[in-house]
Length: 297
Image 1 (cartoon, rainbow, N blue to C red):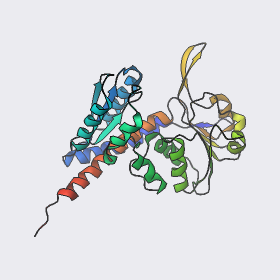
Image 2: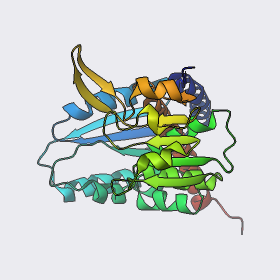
Image 3: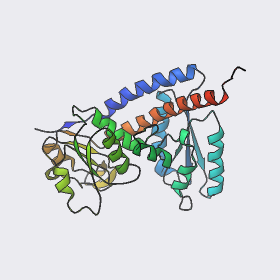
Image 4: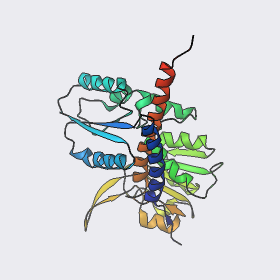
């Protein structure tokens, strides 16, 4: 029996409808959510992402402004630009597109974005809040992957989960999010002696490494759920293709559920970004109201 392919686009459509409703409510209150995208230097690599984000934003009633700066823009100049956006009440979220030129460290820029406008969930405060099970604006890819798991008919409490990959913005946040939901989590990485030993014992496997074909069917427990977060471009006899970190054919023979690449975690990640945008706008609106509320004497 082949695995059920998880339809990321259907999950995205449901999320987008909810986001559009909230964006309409905020707009009626005078707070239409607005995102600003920052690209630096050669933007060809990020152009597809920016266009996709813009399309998704517009369909959800979120304003979207794409800004491109020349490659020679200094870190100091970019820091000043971000501080200006932090102070602008008309801007509710900032997206920093990657890749950036070598002289611009991405972590410094992520720390410069105000946590209330950190719609990508990359600020150290946003990542740190997950440890306290306080998820406001979480890292979009990690949150999207866990949202997909929540749509499956599996009880999360006590679920055995293996996360392959321990990056700061995907693998580690997924592990903390799942622990917050009551799952028992094993995190594997390049120093793990036998990844297959852990993955075969698990009800759910997440993989986010960037190695095509890393997970094969023989590494899975029959009926397990496989959430493939990898995005890799590979050359085939039919030309270039986008594939995940799992060998879809062999895993599909063993797994109970599997996410396709493309069409799985990717669309849900963009929907999560829009969900964060309206949440950020709501949080800022309440912050301004509380800060500037008139008090009667």
